[in-house]
Image (cartoon, rainbow, N blue to C red):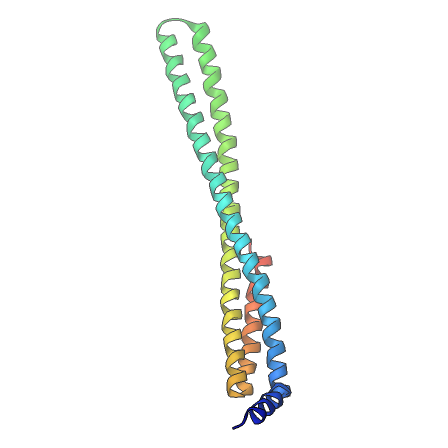
Length: 172
């Protein structure tokens, strides 16, 4: 086959409406894939940040609990020594730390809950990403084999992937 004949054949293939439709489908799926991929990375990062914040809160809780315990020991020590003034002061400190513990616990649990929500959203986005990637593969195979069934599979997979990714809006 000469170069001119080969160029002519490629030009005819490029003008084939099936190839154009499949290529357009691939471009749309690839754009959706890019968006879903970035959103998945963002949600994963938010999940990790919230988990770290929760961990920091639990460390703060532990520090406050240690202070409360020390205040209770000091209160008991001064009570045994018959020093009610200092004993009362440490009792107030222990009560303050106990109240702080409750607030810190609420905040840490809220951050953990937010982290779990972000994790579930990230997982859905990653599953959507997988379907979109497989759809691009089916579209590529459709162009190579000239089989409409593969193109339809690519469209269906792309819709499923986009649907799974869009369902992250409903996850709480």
